[in-house]
Amino acid sequence: MFLLERKQATTYFHNAAGRVVRSEEEWTQRDVEMILALEDYEAGLCQGCGGDLAETTKPENQGRYVGRIAAVCHRCVARDVAADNNHPHPNALTYSVELKS
Image 1 (cartoon, rainbow, N blue to C red):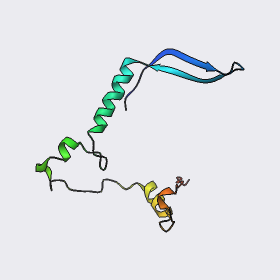
Image 2: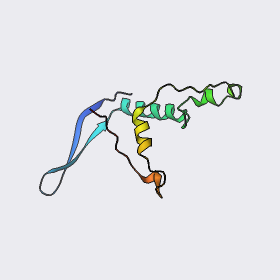
Image 3: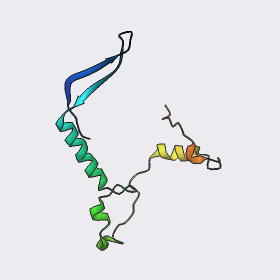
Image 4: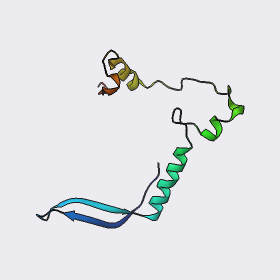
């Protein structure tokens, strides 16, 4: 995770009654550079597995990857169990998952 800095300057916007309705903080040059670097980095990742496309798309790496289960997310299991796949719009459903006490 990139840590961003903020300038101390904050612009406040007021309504007719004088109440603050929103505020904006300015981005530093470092903030902008870090965000652009993150965008460049993420553009080089596979959207499916998160692997580095420069490595994962090399022809010589075809057939060299072995899939293994690293961990089972029990929260995802509970979400999948709750899923109603017979619903006419299953992708439109949202689920709440809680950790039992």
